Length: 117
Image (cartoon, rainbow, N blue to C red; front, side, top):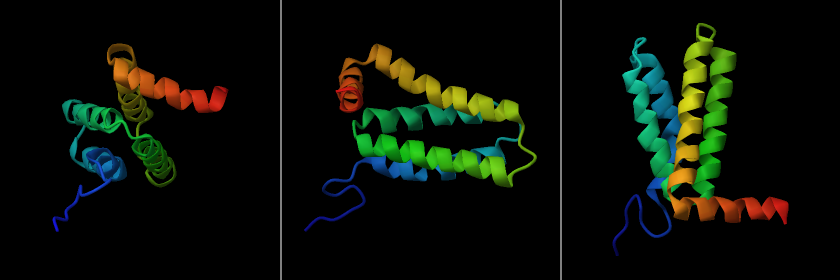
């Protein structure tokens, strides 16, 4: 029997969503004021969203929110400008995918239909 990291019902979106706070912390510590390393967040978020798994989306939101809470409470030397830049990057990717990729748009519309009847 073949077993592995992505065997059966796991997807790369689940794994990346769970590891997103580790990537963000690594980037925060090693970016040293440069902007271009933060561009690595864009493909990671895109892969999570394009995986099509709502659970991965929820994991990304919860882990990202937990990381932002950690930053707000534990890291006092954080500049608000860098936090705002990170939030803009994370929010821009889903909007661009929603506008340009119709399977993602239908998946989001179906998900939002749960809340609005």
